[in-house]
Image 1 (cartoon, rainbow, N blue to C red):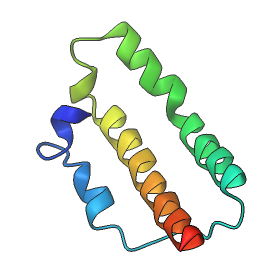
Image 2: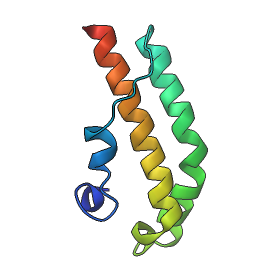
Image 3: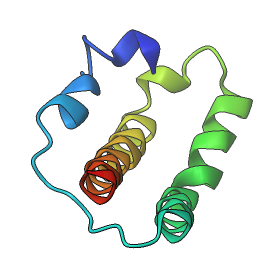
Image 4: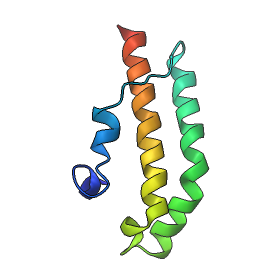
Length: 85
């Protein structure tokens, strides 16, 4: 993901330009919910990384699923910030 943070898929944009937040009233529950969201992509990403460690970074589904996780995490981070402040 580091190589795609500012170029290629530019995952940074999903965080930097995020304007949405998920309301956080219980940080522990928010972490569990975020993990649950990410878990739906785990099997595919893990399988691609394990079976094709040299080329998984160019798999369009790995990129898309990673973007979904980064975007959702940014929403939770925004919500956690609002909760703390």
